[in-house]
Image (cartoon, rainbow, N blue to C red; front, side, top):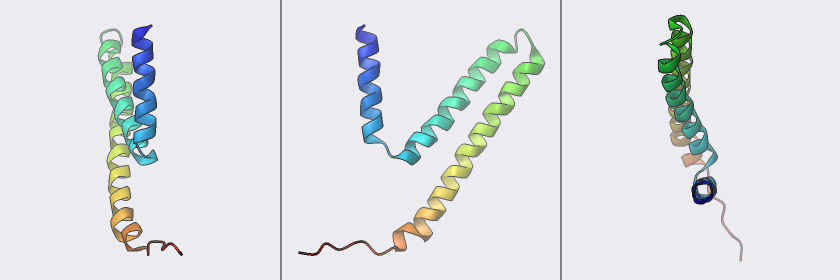
Length: 89
């Protein structure tokens, strides 16, 4: 039970301390790592299916890279140039 409580506390902390973009990026990386691990195990039994799982991992890492590039371009060319809101007293 202590393990589940510590995992739950970790996930609550992660949820409150990261932005939506960071959560998406973490999801891409987790999918990639899990797909590679599963592909390694599955390829011992069925090589063709293992190669398809590696393809899924390659697609996930490609989405990760594309998302990072697009987000950085958007951040540097649009978001940083928007005027910040001023508070009225």
